[in-house]
Length: 70
Image (cartoon, rainbow, N blue to C red; front, top):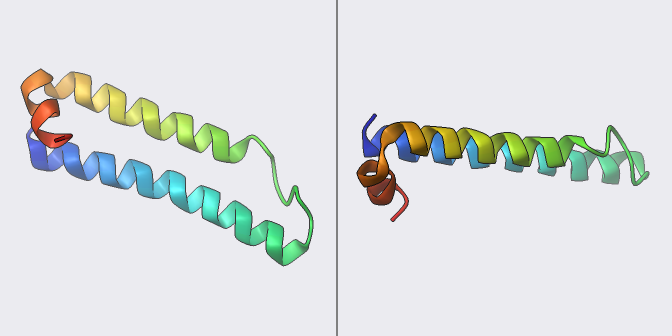
């Protein structure tokens, strides 16, 4: 895995978690309730993104991960 691939994985992982959190907040505003859907969904999305980034960084190797996260 090269630095470009690892950078894209990191970008899309954060983007997916951000979209879940943004959709949760938009749904809360639209329905005028504090719990429009499962309250654990944003947390799970964040943990899933972190796990994806962590596993991809470990599989890429230290040098590639250092270059991609710099």
